[in-house]
Length: 558
Image (cartoon, rainbow, N blue to C red):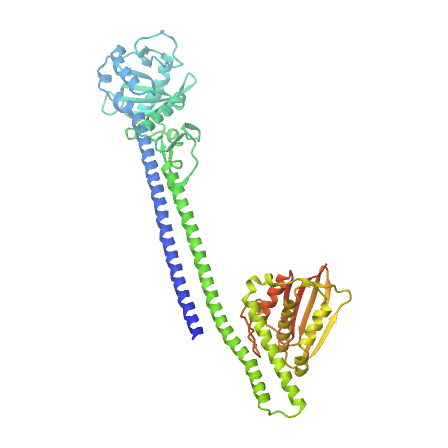
């Protein structure tokens, strides 16, 4: 029944531990996915914010870049002013200069004027480098100028554009060593667009817009959109990858969104086909949320929770594993103790019953002859020694946790110790037909130990050798010196111990599977503890069917 109870307890404990493990695993699984979804939500929110920011920035830039063409060039005032009085357009141009920073000059031409009569209206605060004469400081923001050479260059391109019947055109040209983008609106005198009637347009200095326009406008839009406060990063690069505005942004996956931007200061819808050279290398606008504090905090927080959760789960798993192991060990120990009690009870009853039967025989006077009396006397002595050894083992087991306190260490001669053992087992050896050989190498020093404890140690080893020897009844005690230690071997030719049992036979209550006679399961455990308490060591070498050699290493008495 105790074995059945221990088995049931072990099974129930195993199922309970398994259930707890599964619960912990499910808890960690759902917690992990919850944290991952939280982190993914933060990343998705940051991605959407960067996407919205880049859309806002590109829309703001595109709208501003086509603003002059849509609102200024399309104004009715250009058609109403007389070509020989450009000052009439001063207010409109001044207003355009104030609203839009990128036009450097406006120009106008009408067919009713003399050939080459281009009127230029320059920005007073930023006059073009090709302007021939400097009229000096001006209180008005617009400076009116006429330059036949520049007018001729522009007119040649405009007539070429007009041959295609374009209403709005854009092209690049170099004037005075500076690259310009020219945007012009063309009007025709006939319905077939064969005769050019009027041209109005503006020039944009490309080096200036690279250095000033995009960085200033992007900063203004960024500040209005609170992009800097939200931890977003901005980058504008030209078609060759050169940084124009913002900061360099490396590719950081979904947290970076980018859009392309054509460097044309005109509404693309108003131009049937933009020049290939103007569109072949679009500019790139990027916005990244990689350094967004909210994302960083979410990622750090998620990682921290994952680490804490993993550590807690690991600690709980280790605790459960240790608990399960302890419970299994406790169940095994309970079973071993049950076997131990049963075995010890039997071992105690056997010599007591034998001594009792011999005593009753002697008391009733059933024996005749001196040899009978001697035989019964030897039997009583043998069983008494057997009972004494068992009691000594039980007493040693009861104090094994503090056995060192009862030792009386002294130098002991190995010869005397082994002779005492031979005398103690002499009758039993003779009756069982054992041949015990004692070999002590010359110059073997004395050992330092407790005489009674060492007697108990070797009593258990010899008793085991006698118990587990069958047909080949040979026993050998060998002592030799090795450095500062004395090695004493107890060798038999018995049934041996299997390799899987060797690590366990020195534990309390453990008995071999191939048991042929009784035993308490304490002998080797007590012998190992006594050897360790003496500063020594006990080793076992054995193989089934080949016998066993137990080596006890004890410190030499110096």
